Amino acid sequence: MKEIYNFSAGPAVLPKSVLLKAQSELINYRDSGMSVMELSHRSSLFEEIIQEAESLLRELMAIPDNYRVLFLQGGASLQFTMVPLNLAKDQAVGYINTGTWSEKAISEAKKIPGLDVQILASSQESNYTNIPDLSTLDVPQDLAYLHLTTNNTIEGTSIYHLPKSGAVPLVADMSSNILSTDYQVADFGLIYAGAQKNIGPAGLTVVIVRDDLVGKEKVPSAMLDYAIQAKANSLYNTPPTYAIYIAKLVFEWVKELGGVKEMERRNQEKAQLLYDYLEISALFDSPVAIADRSLNNIPFVTGQPELDKQFVSEAEAAGFENLKGHRLVGGMRASLYNAFPVEGVHALIDFMTNFEQQHG
Ligand code: PMP
Image 1 (cartoon, rainbow, N blue to C red):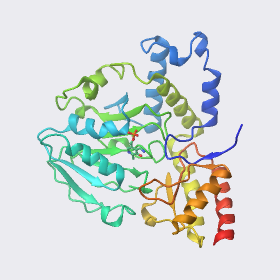
Image 2: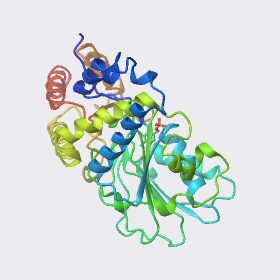
Image 3: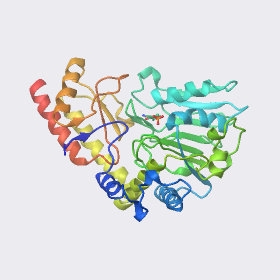
Image 4: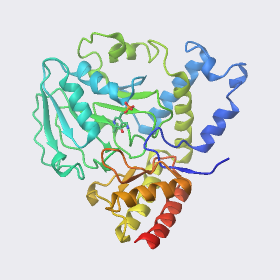
């Protein structure tokens, strides 16, 4: 089999042991004579899978009992609409704009007729290379919620210090650092994440929502209504059964390795290796403010677009896949999620060092 390192921002690398386990159970799951893909979502075998997935996620994130866990579809992008539909009607809503995904969340909220969408802080002027200072943020107490993106996948920044929002619930798009940075669920009213980075395959979206925010507003579609999804235990319609099964295997893997704290430690170690090299490199540089640098998505540039291109293509030929930066920011980006091995970071640094010797 071709050996590569996959730096994709998502869908991203999965733990090899999870893939092997899925392979071993593929044709005949628990002696049912069927694969998980062929099981009815109403069968007891699948119910066990979804319940186990939920209880593992609750354990890993220490989710308090007054929060519901929903396994939905539509990606994090559908949450850009579901959040305002479910949480706000005649109230204004607040957003912190720290990058492309925050912008998209804001733009979808603005499409909801009559909704007053307020931007309380933004780093747009600095091209999103930092997180605005949130420590002194004045959050109007009549907002329905304050939305933020905890990790900015494209720009490579993370929010390490949450704003003090008083009674206003924080809503977090945690798509690219859920289970990788150790946040306290109780600090948020709602957390959502597309699965395809730290949880499992694309097609599954996880929503963790405090009880009092479920059923808050009347929603004109059953599929978009947290209350209906919660009442049906995420089985209102056919859920993405196979993605939920793989997520369950990933949760087991995270637990075996020592949980979210251990993931965070490993991610800090991996990211630090690459950031330390970027600091001493005379060719490669990080465009991101030091205090706000992401552990999971690390953009870097040579400052010469042609050389960046050459680097990406030579890297790919050497087995370093998906290092091309997002089309909006250019350069390179190494995404180092939970399942990305530290050996791959060492190998990348060796490769970059060689490239630098030839082109620096
Ligand atoms: N938010 C963030 C922070 C993301 O990184 C992404 C996907 N890269 C999205 C939202 C959109 O997610 P999806 O493709 O699941 O809709």
